[in-house]
Length: 353
Ligand SMILES: *[C@@H]1O[C@H](CO)[C@@H](O)[C@H](O)[C@H]1NC(C)=O
Ligand SMILES: *[C@@H]1O[C@H](CO)[C@@H](O)[C@H](O)[C@H]1NC(C)=O
Image (cartoon, rainbow, N blue to C red; front, side, top):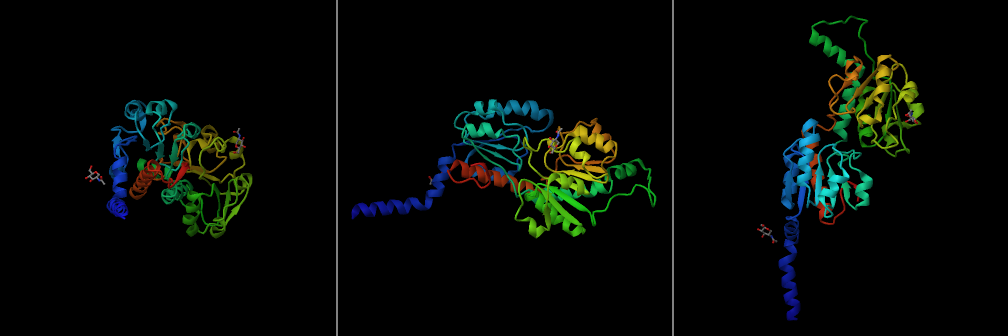
C-alpha cells in the first residue's frame, strides 16, 4: 500500500511536467539552420526545444556557393537536424561532416530535388518538406505569370520605361484567358489552387495530366488527358510538377513542337522541367506565343542570358512562396517537423518518414 502511494505521488508530480522534461531532454540537441534568411517565427519554435545554430550567411549567389558552404561544413558536426532554407544541394560530404547522429533534414520548400533522397534514405535520415502551406501563394504567381505573358507585360513595361509607347488599336495586342483551354501539368496542391484561382476568369476548359486521375479534379471541372493531348489543345500550359528524372526537360523541342502557335507556357515548378535552349528557339521563332517563368536554370539567371533578350518572355526571380505569411508558415512547419522527428513522433509532412 505504501509502495503504491509513493508510486502514485511520484507519478502525480512527474506526469504534468512530462512535456517540459521532454523539452529539457532535447535542449542539448543541436539544430543547424542553413542560412540567415530563416524567419524568426521558425527560430522561436526551434529555440524552445533545441540548441539552434544558424549560419550568418546567405544561401544565394556567390556567398551561398562559397562562404556559406564553408561555414556550414564548420557548423554541422554533431548536429541532430538540419533546417535547409533554400536549394543548395545536400551533399555526401556535408552528411559525412555532420556525423552519424544526424537524424533529420527539414527542407523549407515543397520541392526536394536538391536533397539527395537516395543518400538520406541509405543513411536512415528522415526528410520533411513544406508542401500545401505554399500552394496558394505559388498559384497566385502562376496567375500573375499567365496575365504577364498573355498581356505582354515585359515589352509593355519596357515601352513605358523608354517613354516610347508603340501602341494603337491593333498593335501590341495580347491573348484572352476567357474561353481559353488551360492545361495543368501536375494537378497537385499548386495545380489545384491555380485552377481555383483561374475559375473566375471564365476559362473555357481545364485539362490536366499526371500519373493518375485525381479525385479532386471533378469538383474543379478539370478533365484528365495525356500530355500529348494537353500540349496540342491548350492555350495556356502550366507546369506544376516536381523535378524528377522523369520530368527533367519534359518541355523540349519535341513537346514544344506539339503546342499551338498561340500557346503560352507557364513554369512555377523547377527550371529544369524545361530545356531552355529549346524554349529560346520556340519563343524567338514565334512557334509559341509567350512564356512566363518563375523558375529558371540557373538561379539567378545571368543578366546577359539570351532568354532575357526575348520580348515574349515574362520572368520572375523564383518568388512563388515569397509572401510574409507563407514564408512564416513554411518556417514554422519545418520547425514542427524537426520537433516531431527528434522526439520520435511522426513527421507532419514526411518525404522520408
Ligand atoms: C527545464 O529547464 C529549465 C531551465 O533550464 C528549468 O527551469 C526547468 O525547471 C526544467 N524543467 C524540468 C521539468 O526539469
Ligand atoms: C521530350 O519530352 C518528352 C515528354 O516529356 C519525352 O518523352 C522525350 O523523351 C523528350 N525528348 C527529349 C529529346 O528530351
